[in-house]
Amino acid sequence: MNDKRSLPPPILLSMVLADHVHRDEATGKFFILGTYSCIRAASFPACHPRITVYLALINGRGPTSLKVRLVDADESRLPVFESEGIIEMTDPNQVVEAVFLHTGATFPEAGDYRLQLFAGENLLRETRLQVILQPTSSPAPHFLPPTSPPHLAS
Image (cartoon, rainbow, N blue to C red; front, side, top):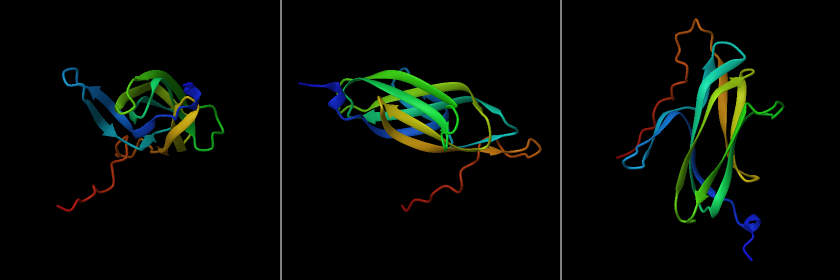
């Protein structure tokens, strides 16, 4: 008997927050543009225009329900947003890529938030998203630039 509830959840290979994810129609390749882990806001509540999440999963079997939700670090409030969808995972050895897009996320205050990914009822991963008060008089960019880039030995 092959009971779907007894199957292991898919394995998440990658979960990336980005300004935009583009999929090339000719090649099917995804291009991830403007990754970030921090948002600056001039005041609160703050509305962020779009949150895009790129996902890559493997080891799935059949239709798989995914849910992306953004919550405050303590989960003391309702989620900032929840988005759900179903992806088809026909071959457990095939990497399946998906993109979630949410527009108009409103953050009630500065602080730490967690972006969570669920497959069914299974939490696959969560990643931290900082939201920082940045007064408009400051010339700093909306998103925090990365610290110095890593140096790789050749």
